[in-house]
Image (tube, rainbow, N blue to C red; front, side, top):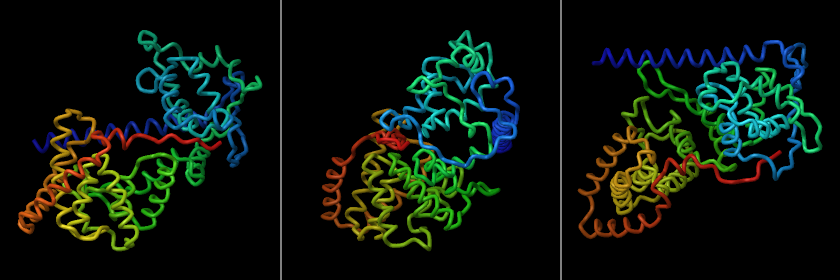
Length: 386
């Protein structure tokens, strides 16, 4: 059994590695090839182009720029990058390209994706609603790619250079564009796993930079508090010690360099998560009151929060919404919660337990939603910057 699991795991790793290599190869192929066949489409040739490191503001009026979710949905409705790699809705793709070619920052990363996948076009997709390849689309609709004054648009040089894309991603993150800040903050604050599958510790410098970018993302509407508090609290930048989610990192194992005010801030964020039915958030509140970390020690409140975890588990099971949580990650959370709960039951009097039950009823009224994952993935509405 162990050998078969190992083989399946090895196979998955190999397939993932091959997929990554393929994507990188496609990127490099696209950005290194000559664009002689594309000049008539209004593309800029990539050979001998000077590197222009200027970050241009979008020429689209600010109130017409795409929100992050809007850009993603528009791209996904216009182009299939999962099966046949072709155009599904020409009119929507015209709108999307107008935004990407005019430096709408939320559209640009998806145009890079299109450039990677378009060369894998499969004609069999026409039987399933794929209307044409991207090259055919450009031949038919190039004349409709114009600005608001009717002037023909030209593909920005930045889309022709692979090195430029890396530079842009970093600069956009530094300029606090939320999409890029989130991607950079998430990536640099997690240091992967060692040969035994244990989460590697990150340097304090990495974690602090990750925290900075994730805060930019939150300012721009993201709800990435779970990632943020993991970077704030733990050297691994994660809530788990291992890649199989068998061992939860306890609040008592916080970073040695963690400041008192940052600990309190992290617990404030954990409470926000808990109020949106995050099981991890509820656990952190239980620990905070039990150990007196980020909150003044209060065993009655600790017991109430531990009971809320049980209630939340039952509530989500009753709702029967498997998308509301990642249940496979939670057994160590339930186990640790029960451990604290058992200890509290030995420490509290009957009167104190009743007080905890009363407080539990108050906590229940503060739950905003029983679908934490949906809330976590939401991006609050805001006006994008040009």
